[in-house]
Length: 255
Ligand SMILES: [Zn+2]
Image (tube, rainbow, N blue to C red; front, side):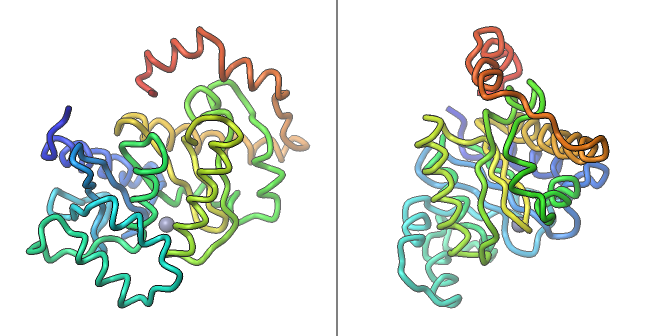
């Protein structure tokens, strides 16, 4: 079991890594990250911070249960939401304001098997998310490593207002995915918005983000050659469940 300080340190390193400019995943204050602690709390990026340079002071620790429960409130004004997030802080003297997407992170950490969450706006992914081709383009898998690292499919959320409506739509997508595949998604795609990588470790969040960016680059390239040739459902199933691929997943610490 990691103590909270170790979790926070791992989250800082993961966030700086995701924010590296040459990776093209985020610019300025884009994106947000979180990590689950063992006591039912989690760290989430504070508003007004940048992943590239964020340090331990750039995160706020809040309780999962009261934040996740906000998704069930029928209507909540922006001020009510702000007050409820303030009240959910583990340390009330912390002056930082949790990210606007804190409810989404609480749901990701309580409704999936993820311990670390990295939400980014990669150029290669958003070229696809902002295109008219998005639903066709993500309807199939392209190559074995996509499946090994990013799972048998991405979960997909049509464009939704950021904040509580988006958090609810993402939760619905988790449930649809779990019903279909009997596991948590690794990748959530949000139309006209970006990517969420759900991992058991910082390394897995980084690997998922990197591999999904590669998938989108290959997908874009495939359209230049007449369109993607998707793997058959049987091939996807086989790679998803093959013993040697499960072994590879374990070796890559992909959980
Ligand atoms: Zn975003």
